[in-house]
Length: 101
Image (tube, rainbow, N blue to C red; front, side, top):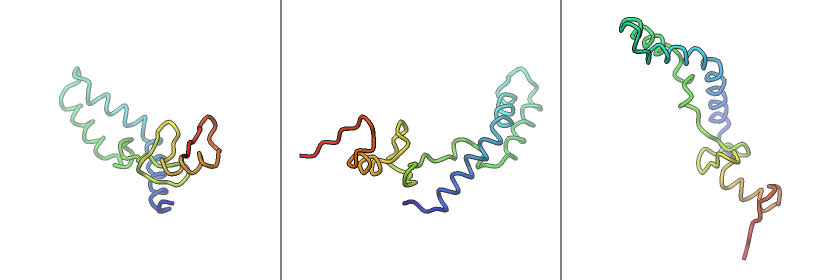
């Protein structure tokens, strides 16, 4: 199992991303709009910089739903290779046939 604090920190980041996604998208649209004067675009950049850093989607770490492990993560299954192997051995993943020889 991963440290509970690391898992909770990641959940906090997910909440911040959800809360600030609209505001962040509007500011990014202003920044990338070449029709606006440079002063307005720069003001949008400054407002974007004032938002919490953890509200950026890039800061979210993919973690295993079962164990919280941050590495060896399969996106399609939302779990790590170790959890996949354990659950596959127990026959709890439909469609997965685990061979042993």
